[in-house]
Length: 504
Image (cartoon, rainbow, N blue to C red; front, side):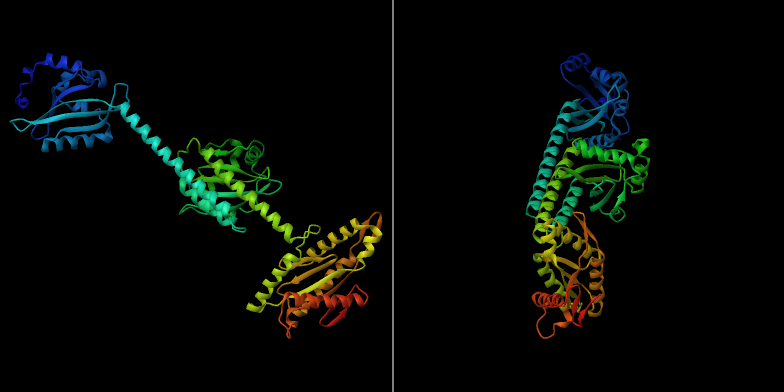
C-alpha cells in the first residue's frame, strides 16, 4: 500500500524494524524520495553504514539527499541523475552502477537496485539497496585485461609467423622489400611513429639509416641519416658498446630525462621530434652490425615486455640479414675470381648481354678490350706461382684504378683480363687502354728481393664495328681476342684495334 512520504509522515515508519533488517544486509538499505517537480529529494530512511562508508549522517539525509550525490564520481554524476529521472517517468526499476568516494578519498564502484512507487501527490519513492561491487569490477577488469592480453599476444604471434614466412620465402634480391614490410607491419601493430634499421661501419664510428617506415604525417629522417659520424656522441657510443658486449637494449623513456653527458644526443633527438625510443641490436655472424629501432613523438605508456617483443623482431631481422649475407657470399663466390676479386666469365657473359640490349634499345655505344700479361709463364717459372699471383692481384688493382665504376672488369682466364667500357665512343677507347698499359709499365714489383716490371698486350673492339654479323658477346670477345693475338705476334706491349697496331 502506498504511503504518502511527500505529505510529511516519515516518523510513523518503524525505524527499529529497518535498523534490524539493515544490520543483516551486506549493503545499504534506503528509501529515496523525489518531489513531483524533481527539485527536492531526500532519504526518509537509509542504513547507518552510509556514515561508516561516506561520512554522511543518516539524519542529515532525511532532510536532503544532496550529501550522497556529492560523493558520486564527476564522470558518473550525470548518468545517475538521468537514470533516476527515467525511472521516475517510466516507473521502471532503477538499477545503476557508479563510483562513490569513500572516507579515505578513494573511489569504489557501487551498484544500486530499487523499485519506484508513485505517491498520491505525484512524488516518487524508491525502495532498494546499494552495495559495493569493487571486487567484481576489478575481477571484470582483470578478465578484460587478460582477454586483451591474449588477443595482443595472439596477434603478435600471428604477425611474427607471417613475417617469418615472408623472410623464409623471399627470393634473392628482395630483402629490402621484406624489411620495409616488416617495419610497416611492426609500426602499425604497436602504433608507433617511426620504425627503422641502421647499419654500422666496420669501425662502429659511423652509422647509416638503411630502411625506414613513418606513420602518416611523420617526417622521414632517412636522407639526413647517411654515414652519420657518432664521434661527438659519447653517451651513444657507450650504448653501442653495451649492445656489442652485453646484447643490451637501449630504452629512452623520456628524452628530457637523458643524463648531462648525453646533451648532444638530447639536442639531436629533440630536433627530430623524438620523445621516447627503443633500439635493439642486430646480430650477423656473431657481431653487432646495426640496430632496429622505434620512435614515439609523444609521451606514451610502453609495455613492460616491449624490449622482449622487439628482441623477437630483431632476431627475425638478424636471421634474414644473415641468410641474405650468406646468399650474397655464395653468389659472389660463383661470379667472382677468388684471387683478384674481379668478376669472372660466369658474370661477364650475361652482363654483356645486358649491355648489348641497352645498346640495341637506346643506341648507347660501348667498347671492349682484352688484356694479356706479357711473358707471364716466365714469372711463374722463375719466381714461383706465389709471385705470379701477386702480379695478377696487382694488375687487377691497376685495372680498377684506371677505369670507371660503370665499366665491367673481369678476369677472363689465366693472365687474360677483359674490360667493357660502357657508354664509350669508338674514338675515346684508345686513350683509356693506353693509360692502363702505361700504368702497368710504370709499376715496379719487388718479390723475393728481386725488382722487375711487366707489360701487357691488348686488343680492343667497339660494338659499332660489328655491321656484317649480329652483335653478340662471343663475336665481340672473339674479335678482341684475335686482335690481342696480333699484338702478341707484333712483339707484345702494344695495342691492336680497328685502326691497327699502336705502341705507347
